[in-house]
Image (cartoon, rainbow, N blue to C red; front, side, top):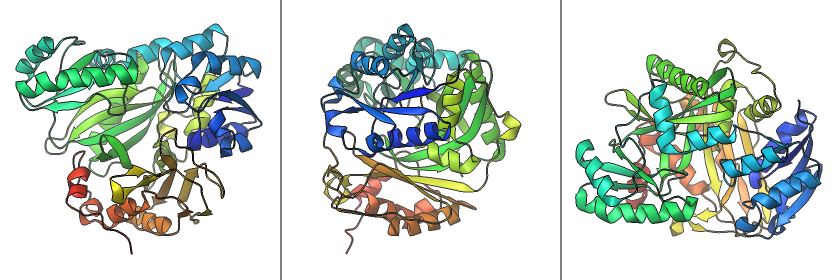
Length: 455
């Protein structure tokens, strides 16, 4: 049954993005918000809004009972979770199912299976997808981890079995490191996800981070090619591209085919992303995890393929079948996205919430800025510092970088410190322009003083 009334259980730029897609489909939009977000742009743009609790996310955006109650009260027939918050919360999905409300995303069982890194790894192996050598199941004790590491060989990567966003990850170069770091990783994972389970992988040195965007309707699945997300700081993505210039065509095809195989094997419904590590020296790639939601960086794929991914996931959530075959999906040119955060990059990326005193947005062909800002808006200090995402599309990578420089120079957000200087410096850097970087490249670059104060 097609969705008619959609509750958006998120905030910021992704809430604005979902409202835009839903309205273009003729869907009535209902924005859930905390008390601190009563004046955000998504509240202004939605057809109606409902407060779900205090500023603290645990009492509002992460409160299952409050969000489900809001959906019932507003007679929503579906909920879109965006990313973060409860986008990958199986208990939330089950609560919606019990209330006969559609979740725009995969089933609770699929989230349980693919959201747990160990279970996802087992599903990938069963589907014939290459995985990084690692532990065969969850590790509950440090001694178990030491035993597995002895067989894998050091260095090893310690990862939380549940969750994502870089939480719980450590790299141990020897047994002493592992015995010290494993309890730290367990504690961090327990605090972040309520689950202290770990698993180990062989640490691949200087890898590229490549991911594949897929869409499934429960029976069939397609891919929308790959993204390069290797530019990271503290395991958080900073700069993303589509496609990945480091891949040759044969590797790209193989990579995307494996992603579709896994999506079909688990009967996937909605938008999802399969993440891989790629060894440029050997041209090997290894599946590491699946994100069972729309990604922050989905706009670069939209710019590359011309497909509105949010519309597609709403369509299949309402019971529709995929509207595109794999042959229908083509790519053109190159797209780049940078994340503009309310942080001061010259002060160790100190958060810098405040009031937007002025706003000047870049315009022109191939430029897109997904955001939730307006002049006079007070950016609250309670949430993630992401202000918006600047996306550009050019005929090739060089053209996209040149356009990114133009777009950044044309973007002005008064009253706040932002990460704009970082992105301008990266766009001018010779290594970035030569596509010569990896997942551990950015932090040493910053430590070496490559980011200079702007005049």
